[in-house]
Image (cartoon, rainbow, N blue to C red; front, side, top):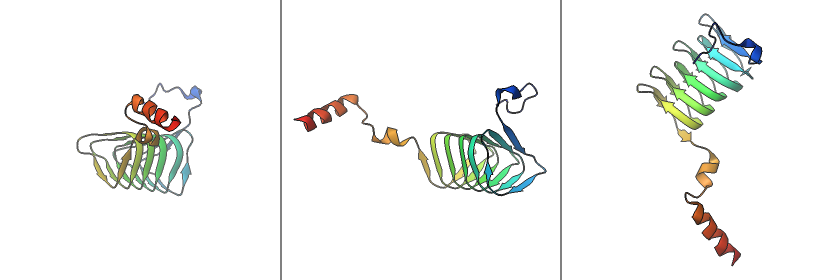
Amino acid sequence: MGFLKKDSDFSSGEHFSVVSAECYFQGTLSVQGSLRVDGTLEGSVDNARHVIVGTDGKIVGDVTAEIVVCGGVIEGNVCADMLEVLAAASIKGDIRAKKMIVEEGGRIEGQCVIGGAEEEEAPSDPKEKTKETTKNEK
């Protein structure tokens, strides 16, 4: 994914936070940029742009972010625009995402709601909407 490559452009204003493999963090973490977890984080992650959980990473708490890539363990609810569950990953909690990709071997234990609310309410055929409007107008 290119996260924290040697040639990363830090002048873009993007903020990167890392919970390294030797790290243990407890509490709510409000991140406005990107977060990579290779250690253990006990608590919620709020407002993040990207959250990447490495293969040895673990989050015990809810995660709210635009994009979540899980290669380790998340024990909590996940709310994201895009969720990617890698082959070695495990998520125990409810998921609400606009889009989701699950690699073979990825495990999810909980309820999943995929797609936006607008998609559920919109008629599948635009002509149906026109027919409903004309019926109501008569």
